[in-house]
Amino acid sequence: MVSELSNFLYNKLFYRCEHSVYDKNLCKYLFFCNFAHLLIGKFFIIMIEINRIYNENCIDTLRRIPDNFVDLVVTSPPYNMNLRIRNGKYCSRQIVKEFSTKYEGFDDNMPIEEYYEFHLEVLRELLRVSGLIFYNIQIVTGSKRAFFRIIGELSDYLKDIVVWDKGYAQPAMAARVLNRRTELILIFDAKNAISRQFEEVNFGRGTLDDIWEIKRGRKVTDTHSAVFPEALVKTIIDNFTLPGALIYDPFMGTGTTAYVAKAMGRNFLGSELTEKYFEVANKRLEVFEKEMVFN
Image (cartoon, rainbow, N blue to C red; front, side, top):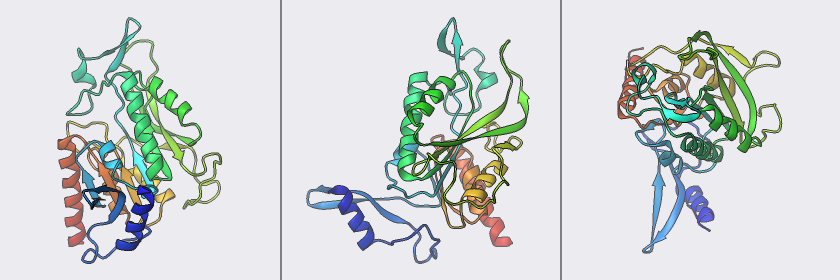
């Protein structure tokens, strides 16, 4: 009943669109009715703004996004680098944290069960709001058990896997461990994962491989060294969306996905929990806007 009422209000009272770009003077905000509560005889309608990054947990953002609202998800969540194994048990790598922490504002050492449950919840929400998801992960001690379980849980939605070859491997911090030169991009499809064929792409037959040789991203702040490379985001957006599409990044970091989406004529939506990265991301977008004005 609530869902039907939400759809009715959205279709009848608000703009009906297919993620097209509106004139800013006519439609600065994209309204939608995610759900409506009948409370004291009044409806409370949820609102979200596109081309904006929200300084909050992505779960909070996702809960305000309606089904099938996003065209494409591109993201690279924290790797949980500081969760280690010692004496056969998980522990936090606090002693050498200054050598391994890539982020400011959190320790990147979530207990493995919490890490698993959090990303499973995020992915399930992403599958609800978007048909296609590119989820970049690195197989390290703090993530591998969680993501192997998640792949099993969501196997019905796993469409393919891309290997991202960064060109060189950072030396492992422990003996008898393989250096990690590659990362994985898990591709989830909410509609037709059983087939390896994508519904809509911009590449021809036999022209796009499943190993992408792209160098690491350049740092835009000293406190975030694990930057998503612009070339990687561009490859995904260019091959799997059309101009005007809405791209969502639940772990926006310093704003690479938003920056590239905007530069390529797409709309964006993002979430970033760490305030400093949120500020850096918005400054990058402000610089982009100024450059566009002068050009």
